[in-house]
Image 1 (cartoon, rainbow, N blue to C red):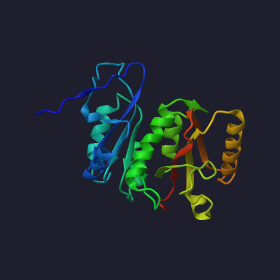
Image 2: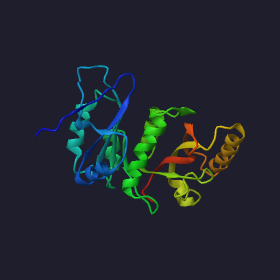
Image 3: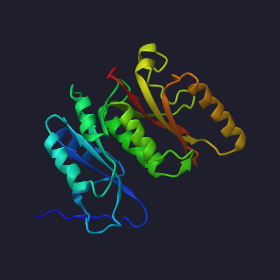
Image 4: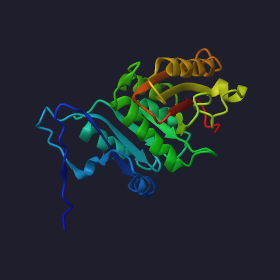
Length: 241
């Protein structure tokens, strides 16, 4: 029986979608409670100019193995979005060639604090909460694309402390500081009360002062409040994590 296609009701809003190449990527994404649908299960019409995706996230077990499939996919969907992010689950020596080939190419990493599957989940949730979602300071898709181009290796996660908003990353270590290229930080405050918000911003400022001066730092404060936490995507030149 043929699988039914779910229509995308774009309306005025823009949406994201994902797709996978490889068994590992497919298994991971199918198990995650994340906000996006697989674009292959959506019915989009390239004759309808009102249909538009803010981004498509392509996850692959190994870009070296699926290079031609990814090329074909980009040609198929490039008219629906100008933001197709290639996320490789496998570190390889051809990453510079892939960055030149596709532009928005990153190798997503795990760490001792965050499994690869959770890093994928936090990456998608960050985009959903702080790029698609409203907030203060106005981090947008252009900032997200800029950071994607700055560094090859990325890790995503969440933390409950504003004092250590990316605490699993040893950013004080000189080796890591020299390798750190960008930090995208999304913040939900406990309260929008002026006094409490000011205190939180002072705590955050102390954290920012510890980061390298040449670091690209992007930040957005959620319009939601009451569940204080941070979400982050961090980029490195080399896979030192």
